[in-house]
Length: 417
Image (cartoon, rainbow, N blue to C red; front, side):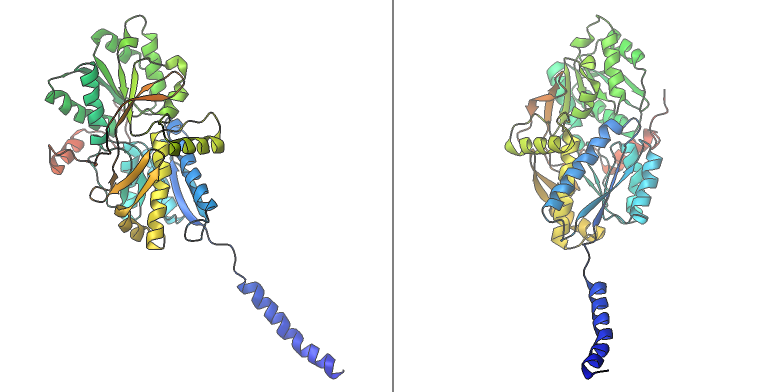
């Protein structure tokens, strides 16, 4: 063997080892940041909640298109709560423990939120709740980004009585939010010298509202205040239409849990010409930021798709969380949670900011009238965003908690006739 061949023979193992080291140590793609999304993709709340998943997906895709978060892409881990509080609780546990998500965007109904709340608190995790609600709650592990009572229920009910009269009819789904919301409304009705003509509930998913419609026809209230959730709204408004030439089309309905997605699903056949809703956002709002948002949402998910307050809120939520992650430099839920009180973003309807004292958002109040095309046109709005007050100041927190406990509504909701 020549000396040159010998040297080549000696170098060959070294070259192989070097090549192996190169293969082993070559950096791979960044590990995705796992984002938990827990909404109803089936059951009575699916039409309301499925669009919120799309809103989160749009926000995540925009962040990823900009280079990701901390140099890593976002990966949504989506679970179906099936409109069932027990399923929501089990899926929240699985997402946190097994899927190891960094944050949870979850729930629509208060029943499901109350089922998930102890899971999130036990694990010292972080959850964003995107829907208006009855208030009377503040968890150190939840950011409440929907409207508090002073940003929706109370001003909406006051506007209804100022506009239409003080004889009110209360109708809702039978679970925590409608019963607690109607307790707040009763306080307001009493304060202004009004009268609650009746207060009626049916379980989530109920389809038979004819008895309620008949009672409304008989009582002829000045206004109906509606806290029905999910696809039961379709059946309620159809029952109003079926009630015959009894003047029900002339009785105003003010809804607190019915947005563009539900209005579109109901269709023109269930259109009520004096139907109003109270939110902080409507798709029809003017402004270049909102036009871009609506265009982006429809380009991604379909030209016939609508946006809504919970959709805009979910979109903003992921961006608020991303801001906090950038600030602390990691995705640890405890560290991100501590930074949330300093966060704000410019959303489609303007600047939204977290109120550090309450863990809720500052929000404007808007009232819109329903159109047959599945949209709302704004008819009234607050001049400025309102500071959230989850516990109305005319009672102590202890008194409010006693009232919530006295409602006697199980976390699972419906079950009462």
